[in-house]
Image (cartoon, rainbow, N blue to C red; front, side, top):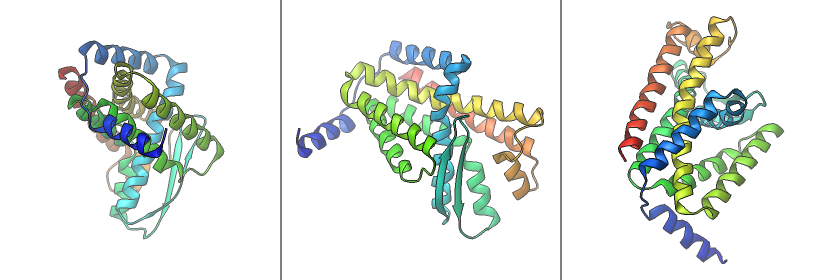
Length: 237
């Protein structure tokens, strides 16, 4: 297949609306709920939430004039994004704030696109996001995770028939939205247990006069709001 044919195929995928069956949305939701509830499965799919989390930090760092020096993904599904630039309080606050809501916001955007009939386009946009992030990965485990994610998503977007691609897009949207809420719940639990110090909430507490627990509540409201609105869009599509 020539480059022109590949481009034509991608263009058709991105621009051609596809129908979303209600049963597909519900099946995707059921699969995602199972993955989030079953601990071993959550330990795998949580990497997707972490990638979006670190991508949020990186994006806002770039938008506020900071330079992203690297992103690391760890086997315990945690991550770290480092950036440098002027240490002004407001930009640093925005960067710290961006991480936990980022998966929910990305999932919300995906839900909107799916409801508008562009489920297949969602897959290719997410693939492009992963490719952009790949160049910023700075550890071997993170590189492995990203290569597997890029290869898997790319193969699925290219090879699967439309009903399966729509289902995958719905599943990813649900995973990002609901997974973002669970990640915030885990953050709150770890902080109550005396763990999780050095988290984004604690960074925000140092940068502002607002305690870390209040920032966890803000994270929860933002992620729950994204999940509620995005879920309504998907179920109404």
